[in-house]
Amino acid sequence: MTSREKLDQWSYFEERGLADRFECAWVEAPDYRAAVTALRAEKETLACDLNQARRWYLPYSEENVVWVSEQSLNWIKMLTVSGSLPWRALESLPQPNGRAYHLTYNDGEFSEPVYVNGGEWEDIPADQWDRPRQEGAGLVGSSDIAQEMNFYLAALAYTTGRFIDDTWFTTPGLLCRIPDGAWPRE
Amino acid sequence: MNDQWELLRGAGLARGFTGTWIESGDTDAVATLLGADLTSRQDCDLATAMTCYRPMAFTERAWIGPHADGWTHALTISGPPPVTTGLTDAGLRFLQIRTMNAYVYDLLHGDGTTTDWATQRWYGEVITEPGSMVEPYLREVGCPESPEVVRSGSWVVEPEHHGRVCLETYLFLTGRMSGRFIDHQWLSEKRALYTIPLPPAM
Image (cartoon, rainbow over all chains, first blue to last red; front, side, top):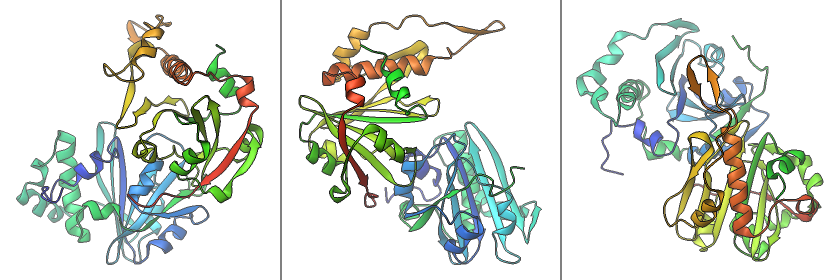
């Protein structure tokens, strides 16, 4: 496991059965606990790492359950375990003038990552793809989808300063349930 | 044999059912292997246990008791399916059925050494590896009756009740292998309701 290609970040989700459906947000914010409150999900939480939280993985469910944890200094990560992440929340979660990235893969279909910068939805600056392209991140992986995901995950890893590896799944975090109606559906 | 799923639905388990059949007559030992907090034990009937019913809640609870001679049953009342590695580590054979909403998961079975699934195929068919412990019982099920085919235009689409047919097969396997089917008596017995704390990180 230690000799694995660093750019094959998607394989960590595949081997844990977390690759049927994937939704993750990387948010510029200093404190993951405060982010859970800002997500209006502080009432029902469970302190755990992602290896523990994945027992609650339900790719297709109407209950929204998210695992929130620190990604790196000033960045947090939010991985959807069940249901989906209310995208409107992404506008208000980052610190003032902060950024949020959102990446999804859904049963054979994936979307290019989207991006909020200082409260506004914007195109991701093109230079963020330079390094993953130079390094061939989009050529690494077990399938077309894996290669596509590895390309975007590499860009996000360089932006946030941390790659996904086994320690990503053992970082302390909070599993939290977002109550129905906490956020508008549209 | 009564309609197994109809009985479980009648008990209020339609939205999510996780049952684990374990080949051991030592109910307390099974509770320990499943990680139960033994001090949380509350002896009660199923109706009382069901007041805590909440599939996939963050708090894990199971209603555990003697099932048949040499077998214990653990019914998940809330939380995700129990971690079964402790059963395999102790060399115990087990079967686990899980449903969530309309979805029927493949049956998980452990032979005391490894675990495997009895997987679902087209038209209500269940298949298993040759030599697996459920194979002889699966042979009794035979070929699934050709269920009503749902047609949409000229396309044949998946039978609506495919999951249900497989679920009945799974409940037949657990009943035959453990020597006891679900019935009204089963549903009215008293068992021990436990809280299962979050197992340590693996």
